[in-house]
Amino acid sequence: MLPLLQARIASIWSILAEFVGEVTVLRVDYHAFKLKVILTDGSTLRISEQHYRDTREQYVYYWLDASNRLLIGWDNAPHHHHLSSFPHHKHVGSQDNRQPSEETSLEEILAAIRARLLDR
Image (cartoon, rainbow, N blue to C red; front, top):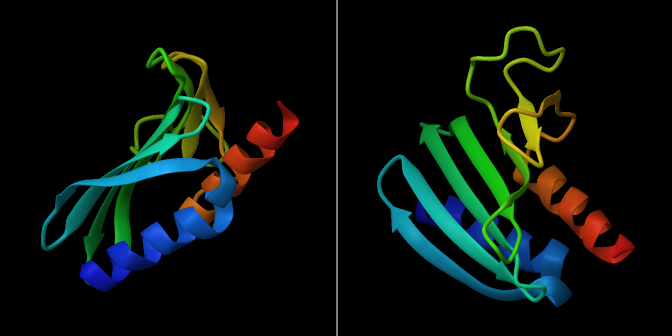
């Protein structure tokens, strides 16, 4: 798990470099890890991944504003069968606003966040 965790942290710094204030490892065990990324605008990105062997089984990437309100949250929980990207989806602005998600990898999510930060 450590090489994968190190690769994820490297991706964060590579894609969001000028926006990253701090990366904290909240938990790591044999099959999973959780990270908290504090961005320079005060927002945070919560990252949680669970793996089985070399395959990512579950993910949750939640981007919260400085007041801890949801900006966008991506996950693959299999409970929104009606969405075209099932099981991948995102919650935009609130848990109730579920939308299909083209972004499914951490790198794609980081790129989407970077684009939003650059537009501000």
